[in-house]
Length: 239
Image (cartoon, rainbow, N blue to C red; front, side, top):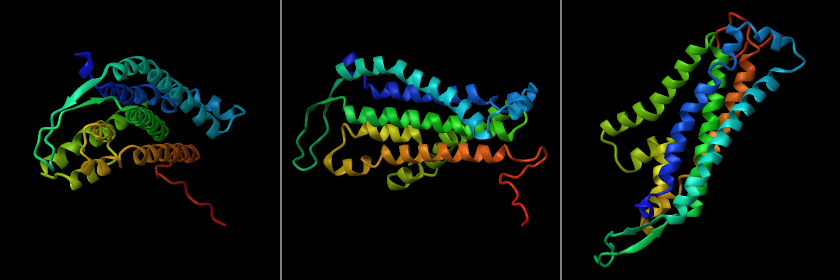
């Protein structure tokens, strides 16, 4: 059944793996240094806080990109063989409409870029909580709790509320797996449905990259706090 194996399904699997890989790699990036008493040595080294954070982030980003490259071969094979049929009814003539559907290269590109941008955002978020927490285990638990709440609990709540159509699309607009599902559905979308599904892709990617920058900048600000400071924004110095 290789002709009916949609390659975007592999992107779903890749996204799930990267979502778990990012917290596993970075939960101890800063909190672990504090536990091992090696953070003080980094502070006296001739590097800035921003360089420390960027170095740790780029190390994780390299692993994210390497994992994505490893998935490219099976995705390419799936894209080459993927062929399926659309048996939907033509809504204008009420005649069964059969057409062969192949993998859409543009959709695959969007799905892959969305998957990588989401993983990079999770990396930046994990580094932020590692900077906020004094224990690596707490940073890991906090990151996983937020991911579970956003990826699992939130869709369950919206579904249990009976929201359908535009309301559900709006509430799950930035959910990566929801966006991937909408990108995959655009292959079989009718002309009147494609306009709404075409919204998925670049908006999520731009937001994920933007949030990555925000988390990294916020982490750098966090490292300026005093040891007992618990606020999320540093105090302004009096003039």
